[in-house]
Length: 422
Image (cartoon, rainbow, N blue to C red; front, side):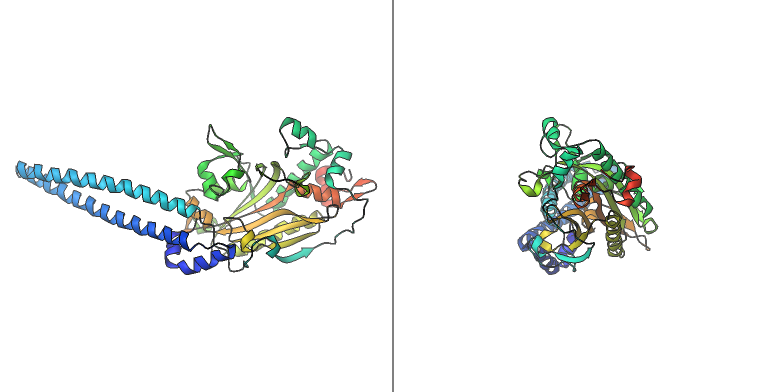
C-alpha cells in the first residue's frame, strides 16, 4: 500500500510512475487525497469537541466543590451534547477512514526507475542469458508424453480424484519432486536463509498484508466457513511472520526460506500453453523471502537473482532473465526479474521464477517497521523470489535431458535422487 504522505507530497511523481503500468491514476489519487482532507477536518473538529468536553468536566467538578449545583448541572447538559457530537464525529471518521483505506488498497505499487514503460510481456527486457539451447528434432517428446511413458506423473488419476490441474506423482516422479525440494532448500540454507515450515491456510489479514487481497481474491481458494485462504505461495505466511513488528537495524537482513504446496484457481486457462505441468491448480515451490533495510534492498535483490541463477546452472538448464516492464509487473512489485528456462520439446520459454522488490508497499500494509539510529520507526523493504517452482523445472528436465536411453539426471541432483537416469 502506498504511503498517504508520499501521495500528498509527491503526487505528480506517483502519477507519472504509475503510467508505466498503463494506468492513469490521477482520479484515484485525487479521491484519496480528498478523503484524507475530509478525515483531517473531522479529526480536528472532534479533537476540539473532546478538548472542550474535558474543560467543561473540570469546571463541573469545581462548581460541585463550590456547591454551585445549578451551574454544574447546566454545564453537564452542555457536556452531554458535546459528547454526543464527538461520538457522531467518531462514527463519521471511521467511515471516511474505511473508504480511504479501500481506495488505497486498490492502488498498485509504483515501479522503480529501472522499470520501462510497456503493456505486456512483449515489452519485457532480456537482461541476461545462459547455457546452450539444444537443437530440436522431431524425435523429442513433450514432458506429458515422457511422464506417461516412464510412469512418473498420472494426470488422469488426478482428474479422477480432484480435477484437472491436480496431478499424481508416482515412482521416480515422486522421488524427483522430493529430491528437487531438498536440493533447493539446502541451496538456500547454504546462502544464509533460515528454513521454516509454514501453514498452508492463512487468515484474511495475512492476504491483505502481502497484497493478494483484494487484488487476487478470485484466484485464491477460500474456505468460507472459517474465512481462511489456501496459500498461493509461501511468501504469504513467511512475510506475515513479521506483521505488526518493529525490528532493529542490527536485525537486517532477515532471510527466510520454506517449501510449501501452492494453490491457485487459475480460472479460464485453456490450450496447449497450460497442458501437462505448464499450469496447475496445486504445485510445489520453494520460496525465499527477505526483509531488508531500505538502503540495501536493491543490493539484496541482485544477490537473490544471482542465487536463483546459480541454482539453475547447477541443474544445467539454459535460462534467460527478464526485467519486467510496467504493464507486466505484479500489483505489489516495484521491480521484478523473471527467470525462464527453454523447453526444447515445446520450443518455447517457460517461466520458473520471479524475484521482486516490493520496497515499502507490503511493509506499509503489514505495519512492518524498524528503528533507525535515532530510534525513530521507519518502514522496512520486503523482497521475495521463487527458488524454485517445481512443475516447469520438472518439465524442463524431462524435455531437455531426454535421449534414446531415457532421461539423464543432472550431476548436482543425483545425490538427492539416488539415481542418475530415468
